[in-house]
Image (cartoon, rainbow, N blue to C red):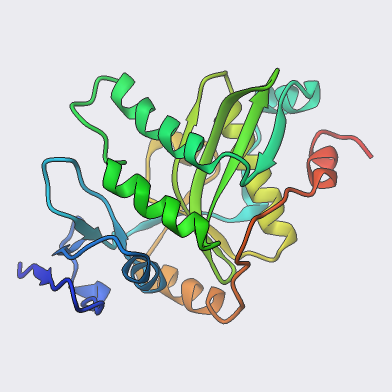
Length: 240
């Protein structure tokens, strides 16, 4: 397979159908905001470790959540009804991305794919209004959360973490409810796993993903800080 090496001065990516069977499409380049936004608009995302160059991926199949089809288990529903967590959006982006990186290290990995360079790149996107976080709090402490970026009516999930049982799942439910209210078409989960499939993610062909992405990009992007509509979570908890 021929793997395109990206030029730092050129933002163009090769067509996604040239990716390897594993989804690897290109190598190199940088993580400046313009390149990242170009990549996501074309169904591509970076994923690499500290000891690797920047690797760009577009897997087939692609794992996505449809906002109205998140699976809420009986135990998770009980957690939601108890109301033990407070949920916010875009109040502690740096803390969320840092916690996601630390979680990978605590699980025994030699390194995290959320490198220092990667963290700074998404913090820059957050400052520009494209990257967003969902925070879940318990007694004033950050219990879990997730982050990603949004373009049009699409949210591209990057990572999630939890320090309390169900906290990351609560963050996903909150994101899905808000995304549904805003008419988002999908939440991208990138690569499938048993965990996200249990939460309601499905695998779709890359051609279908690109069709959905094209539709999502027809709408304007919600740039700037996001705020969760608490009424959406009240209805999820069974409150009026």
